[in-house]
Amino acid sequence: MAKLSGTTVMLTGAGGALATAIAQELIDAGAELILVGRGEALKRAEDRFPAKKTLDLDLTDPDCVDILKKQRADVLIHTIGAFSAQDAHKASEKDYQAMFGANMQSLFHAAQGVLPHMIKQKEGMILGVSAGQAAKMSGPGAALYTASKAAVAAYLLSLHDELKAKGVTTLTLYPMGAIDTSSNRESGLTWEATIDPRALAQTLAHAITRPARAHMTELKVYPEL
Image (cartoon, rainbow, N blue to C red; front, side, top):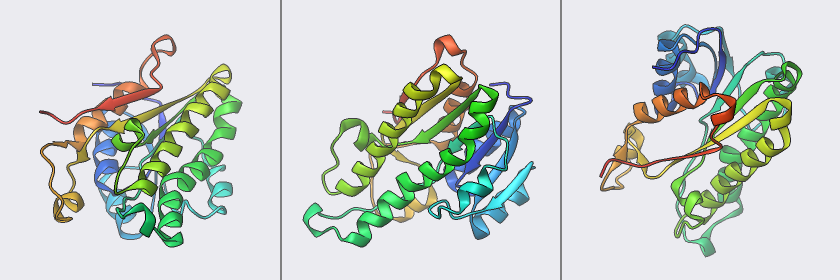
């Protein structure tokens, strides 16, 4: 198990299925948590996990950046995201705003909030979740989702190349299949195989503890076949 004693991790999407698995893994590893989420989901996470701080924030709102800048996080794990499927030629402006707001804008604001402290202390890590479609650069039937998740990957890699000399690194996680969550199971969609969120949590915890000379910028996790 990863050892994260003394490390403060800001976890967004607190209360969500993936974030819950990650929070448990981080607590078990000794990390301190700053939980960022909304409403009842955040309350469930707060009740379940001891946290250094909890923040009820809409990360698509630019005003959240100033609030996040007041926190001191060594690591940001950003799990907020959304999915929708539609024929590309039928996609609406509302569809576009929803996908890029949830998947890219929320990451941008979270990163803007934590980066000043990371750069000042010359150490930090930002981890984000992309998608298998983005890794393949093709998502028929979900073009906006795929494009927004590809933007997540491009943004994180650009941050890494820009800031690695200042001690700040990034990692893009690509779940190469559906994550096994209750919402995915209830959606009516079927998959041949799914990925256990606990496995993703363990993968991220391991990635945080990698030495600088063995850092990974991208990581694909496949479902069991």
